[in-house]
Amino acid sequence: MLYLVSPATNGRDVYATLYAQKIFFLVTAQPRGATFEVIPYMDARHYAEMNLNKNRREKSEDLITWKELFNQTFI
Image (tube, rainbow, N blue to C red):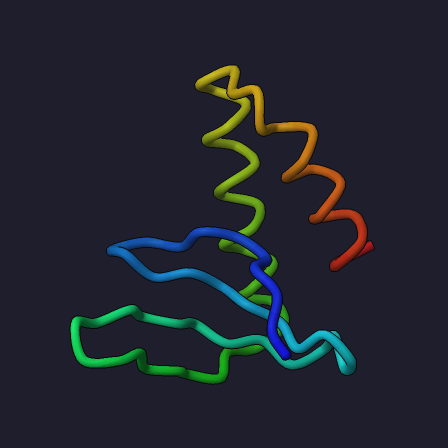
């Protein structure tokens, strides 16, 4: 099972495995399915940090949720 860690770029999202939270995937949704690419921990953290910065700039109501998820996943 996977859970969403952060949106990435170009319609892709970063997911992590629910049980072994050190395996991250860059998932691209396509009309005929999805592609999964294993990415390193630091790349996943980078995408999550970019998402936090974007939400801070935009003063998004979702910032607290993304911050909690970031802390649970990476801290």
